[in-house]
Amino acid sequence: MTCRTLSVLLLAFGAPAALEAQQAAARRQDAKCQPVARRHEATFHDTSCNLASWRREADSWRRGTVHYGKWLTAASAIALTWMAAHEHARSTDAWDALSARCRANHANCSVGPDGRYVSALSEEYYQRSLRHDRRARTRLLAGQGALLLTIAFFLLDRGHGDDIPDNIPFPSLDVSTDSRVGGARVGWRWTF
Image 1 (spheres, one colour):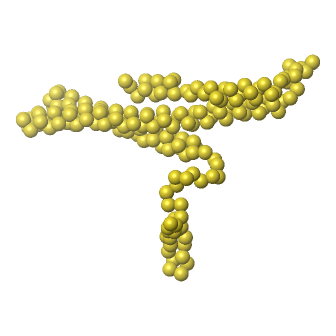
Image 2 (image 1 turned 120 degrees about the vertical axis):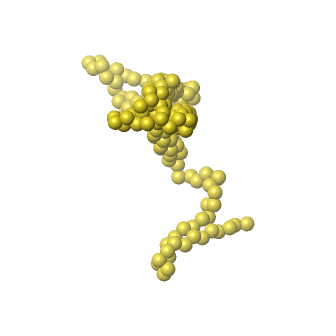
């Protein structure tokens, strides 16, 4: 499967669907906002209700995209890294075949005036190694990009509340600067 096919499949199947609870909440809000059409216009009388409904749908879509997108991009990063490792192994196999051929007979590794191997089979092994190495590099860079996108999605999905969860490790860790010694102080309070 090529990288382009994989990215098209990920985009096609990665679009998040609205959850039933989100759809029910939207129906309840829409039931409160009964539109009253004006006589001479094709607009609704209460535009604030329509604007709030639109914003709620847009926010819900964005939250769903970020929430499910982080797992999609994480899976993409893993898949692309695995594919890069596979291509690197194929490149190594071609290089090892070229090295074995050269060790068996040094004449197989002689280079012509144009910089290519004189032996067509040796040149084929070399070009195959380069081709798989380029593929591995491209897939590894794409995997790293997907990993960066995953990190961004995880940070965006962590919420905007001011409440501190119960599972924060070392909540009493204190880091401050000390002007007397020109450095930092690290303190830790242990309550029991």
